Image 1 (cartoon, rainbow, N blue to C red):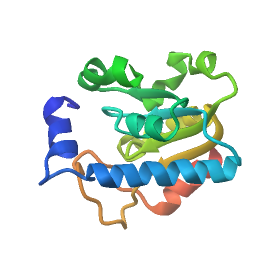
Image 2: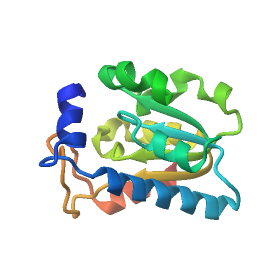
Image 3: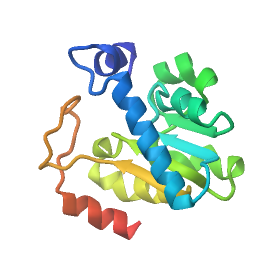
Image 4: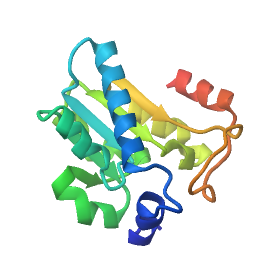
Length: 174
């Protein structure tokens, strides 16, 4: 389902896209500077879980040319088109352990990003997904989720609406 048409609609179409390139750049700068504030040093390694086409990668590289970026994405289309150029490999949030990322960055990543992904993880798999993300955090995690009380735009058909407390409880447990 995450084919070229999906990415064209939600990432490039002026009518349907959720965020403009300028908005994405602002989010990346905000998350990067927040992580560096917490770490009290520059971010050196980034894991982007559900990277899509890797929109964060060129922005991160422009801000931190030496950053080591690893993207993980289930879309065969996105990985085949952008994988080698942007450092994206095929995988899913529920199966991070299969990718041997600890061999890449044994101490965990300075910044782990999961932007707009966890809302799509079925409730039965959520604890596993968050635990696998947590296992790769060596610094800061940016976990963007939307609750059932938020005004959500974009691909809402596959979302499982959940209360904010539901997310907080599971994040705390992880």
